[in-house]
Structure formats: C-alpha cells, structure tokens
Amino acid sequence: MAKWTPKHEAPEPLEGPVVATITGGTILWFVLFVAQVPFYGWFDDRDLTWWVWTCLAGGGLGLIGIWYVRKRDAAIKRAAAETSGTEAVRHTT
Image (cartoon, rainbow, N blue to C red; front, top):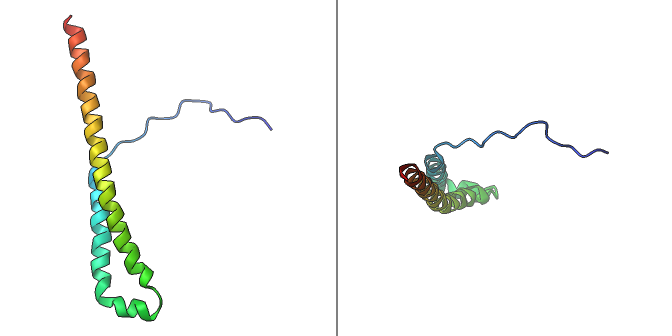
C-alpha cells in the first residue's frame, strides 16, 4: 500500500477569542453545577451523582484552562512585540 502524501499545504490554524471561549465554558460548567446541587437527592436516588461531580470537575479544569490560555495569549503577544521590535531596529539601520 502506498504512503499517503498531501497534495497541498495545510492551512494555517484559526485563532479566535480563546480566552473568552474558555472563560465562557468554565462559567457554563459552574452554572450547571450550581443548578444541579438542589436536586442532589434526585440524582442520588437514580445513581446519577456523577452528573453533578462532572460539572464541578469541568469547572475546576476550566479554571486551569483559563490560567493556561491567558499565559499562552500573553506569550504570543510578547513574541509578536519582540518580533516587531527587532524588525523596527533592522529597518532603521
């Protein structure tokens, strides 16, 4: 069987509002957790308490995600500023 090789270059990845997206998702997980807590007994009677704890885990992991994407976004902006700064120095000399 022949090895598959791409016929053209892959497109650049899309960059969107990553921090806002992760923050919105984290808020949604916490809202779902808070909405389910009053019905914990109902979930417990049906052995579905994992739904409640999944929402809490999603919110907790979302907090880690917010920290990560904010650091990533800052690093990207810092690298872009350094690159534009070196290009400005090259053009002036």
